[in-house]
Every structure is written in structure tokens, then in C-alpha cells.
Length: 136
Image (cartoon, rainbow, N blue to C red; front, side):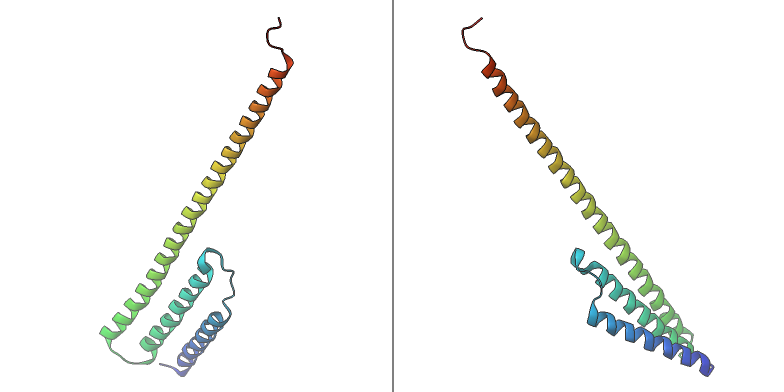
């Protein structure tokens, strides 16, 4: 392995660790949905960091074919698990958004029905005042 590749992989690892620590200290996203964006970004940075670590182990150290296969499988599993977790989070948030939208729609319908009932009651009261009992 050339020193150029070793240096590049070390630089990637340094960048990954710096941004992982930076993200943990600042949590730059807002806190909606129980810090969903911060958690997703943290997971992505962890996957990136471990992917670089495993790649560095494959490329820099001569561990043998079996160890390299397990490290490559680890990279694949980490990235797959991350994609699945993002998909699940997206599905949960979409369901929550649809439920909220439905609740708001129901609330608007109930408010309109209440308003229509109040208007009908007012009209019934107004009609009763125009006619006297027993008159004809």
C-alpha cells in the first residue's frame, strides 16, 4: 500500500472524527420530532467514521482474505442498517404528519358544524319572533 493512500485514509478519518465531535457538541438542528435530524446526522457520521475505519483496516493492514471479507461485510451491514433506520424514521414521521393533518381536518369539520348549528339556532330564534301565537 502506498503512503499516499495511507495518508488519504488517515485524513478522511481525521475529518470524520472532527465532524462527529463537532456535531455532538453543537447539535445544530432544531428539536422537532424528538431531535430526529440530529439523531439521523449522528448515525450517518458514525456509519461514515466506521466505514472509513474498516476501509483503512482493509487497505492498510494485511489481515487476510477472511478478515477483509468480514470488514467489508461490516461496512455493508452498517450502511444498510443506516438506510433502513432512515426509511423507518421517514415512515413514522409521514404517518404522524398524516395523523396530524387528519386531526386538523376533523377539527375544522367540527368547528364548521358547530358554527352551522349556531347559525341554525339563531335563525330558528329569529323566525319565532316574527309571528305571534294565536294570530292569523
